[in-house]
Image (cartoon, rainbow, N blue to C red; front, side, top):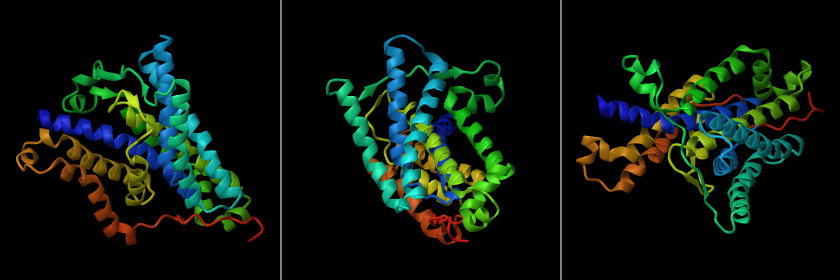
Length: 320
């Protein structure tokens, strides 16, 4: 059973950032704005979050879970502000949303490296100390099975991701604002005729997308490294695949994120799985698994996966 607990814990580490970022992309696309800038937003959010942690730890101002919560907020706010560039270009300037998102993806790592080298005298890696792993949660860790799966050797970010999933579902599917946001993506002309500000709803969708993607960048980097080089290994694009495979719906996105998290776990921990270890395949073969799974699943599900107005048709207030 120990190998099962280990694999499940590793899957959560890979799945939670995918879940949070894909949910962010969902808000943007359900409002009618394609956001392929998730990769760039993740990078910039993670950079400022890690830099904030580095500053606090170096000056011994704060540590522990309180520092992690503040760093997540910093990453989210930076992501939201950065996403406003995409929102302004796409919504007000009617720019091509794919080109706008690509520009942000190219800009983010270059900007992060420039800031790091400028502040740190040519050093591009931002270092931090990982003080955030929770060995076990008192009382809850004693629950049979669940205690070992969720409450031992865990990170607070796991519970943040679950909380974000629940709030996203309630907000999008059960509130008046969520209904308006979805209507602006599905039929913006009708929404405008009903007195809903399509521009405001789309700005809200993109800002929420940026906030969650920025948080997701920091959530991704914390468990796997103690330095950041403005690189999230294509996780933003993988989150887009999760979003599409999840059919732009919160619970399906959660299932897709867990599946892709499992494939990433196999790719990086295959030596701990007896069956895979005995195959003696090259390491590259295992690392290709997540991306091959992405291509195969998207090929078979693309015809049945259609976001409501996911093409992000520009809205012209003059048309009815």
